[in-house]
Image (cartoon, rainbow, N blue to C red; front, side):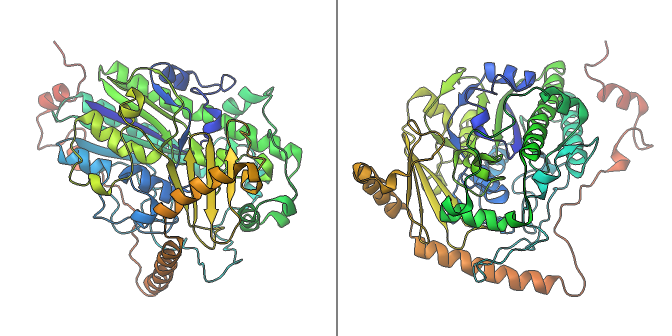
Length: 499
């Protein structure tokens, strides 16, 4: 079957308890949810763009991919769902963001319609050798919340407008039937990622919204856990005094940009329907956004707002309905292969994910969902397990965290400090010990960072050849040219064909 992957950036999964929350203005996503299997408890493999996306594409955790942060190279020898499908004779095409770092900017895609929105080199490499260092020119800061508001265009709107336009044009082209292979089209937007700036038509939808302040107000810096303090420091919180009015504006713009995305999804699904094409559709985000909960913004955390993402699949054999079993974005790769009837057995021993079709059917036990984080605001890797109702987080620098998400969905009570939960803590700690060698993980990250700093600084001296993807449009093969027959062009490019 054909496959359409719709990916968004930094969309908080707690806003999708069963499809989009009823107060969000999202008619197209709501309609998609009604015909989808909806996974209420899906977690990113890593709450940051490049690591999360590399894991989503490959079905592997960052400790395997080596994509620890937003400037780590995605290895070319690591199969992605695009490789698996292309090997099975699928057309594979990407329009939009995937945050590939390194000279390979395709990773199995046969065609790529846009460049990426972020750089492909090693310039955003964190450095564990310099704890406390803040790299001003690319680290997030709280200015994104302070400057929230309205604009008719931004860098990101320009990008996503182009992403959606190219997706629609590609669907028209696929409908013409010049290539009889099945297709997998991945459409990847950068919204609702900050900056929190939205177009007026979407901003106005949330004038009377009841959700413009966080459920959990800001917690004093001294009362936060050590990793959250590092996030505050990385976000330069001392340089800003964020008011309730600014929080309201930032959250309003974020919700408005969800509605902006909903329109883009609607445009794409409308073209799919009008061109009479059928496709399995998967909707997912790379990670979430804390949106001011506890005073935290953006991602980089294992708290629910940052780590939990929406995931919906509309496909034959996957009955619509809600699934509460915790799953992961690393399950996307084996799921797409399963839907396409593609055999992954050659690499199965080294893959982490399971097919969501089997989770939906109850024919496979998902087991604990693992997450990793080893990028800015960390000075040693953090790991986490979502196992049933519990979430366990561990870092060599910090005290353990254990939350009961059924009894404490806002994660305000750390049960790792409670003797009554010592058995659960010991069980999850043993699972973490069996899965991770944190000392080796830390050494791998440090080695990677040190190498990349050397390479980046070297390549910026003298002549510079960027790795950023340069989209190529073959103008001599478009529209009408003198090596073509006008009659053939008029007929072959029309959909549906004339009588």
